[in-house]
Length: 120
Image (cartoon, rainbow, N blue to C red; front, side, top):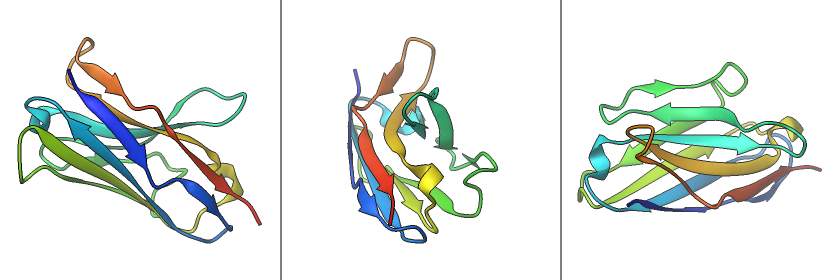
């Protein structure tokens, strides 16, 4: 079992920055691919960024060059923090952001989400 807790959301003006954190606890966390997804009102949940256990990253074009995902699992296999640095934020980035830990279809976990609002 893996528990995920997101933090760092809030209200920011267009062009501003935020850093989201996802605190994970469980077992053998280092093997999981960690990801951030978001869901805006009336829209489907979409991928924002993923990072594999070896550090390979993936971003959709909508956030590439503005968002950076990173992970820190060097201290323990039972605890892991994943970050999402978001720069040059736009109103269309407004959504609830969810942290995900994925290993298999059954070993797939979600956090409760954190709200990000980009508005002047």
